[in-house]
Image (tube, rainbow, N blue to C red; front, side, top):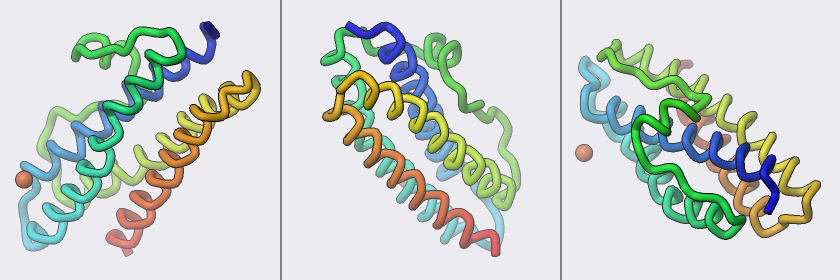
Length: 145
Ligand SMILES: [Fe+2]
């Protein structure tokens, strides 16, 4: 059991969960002339991210760690800040874009530790997550142009 890897994996997992919740929160509360497209864009993103939450948690279990699963633990661990206010749609896109880029950096840290420890199955999973967040960042960035 590699403590450093598990610790970093938990941070990335909590960060991804916070990202997921924020995208869903924005989906519910976005308003304005671009409601329809942003409502749909946020749904595409939160659906993809949420679809990997269970697998991510079980990867942590496979490494020998326990998967966090409470709001207080997520708040403690997450490197992504949550949003409590309903902000304008453009700001939602900007925030989520920045978060998607941050997610890539957070996942890369875990990826490097996993690779250094020969956990190639886990690093493959992390590489796919990085790819997915890169795609989310592209869609969000394109919306801001
Ligand atoms: Fe919905």
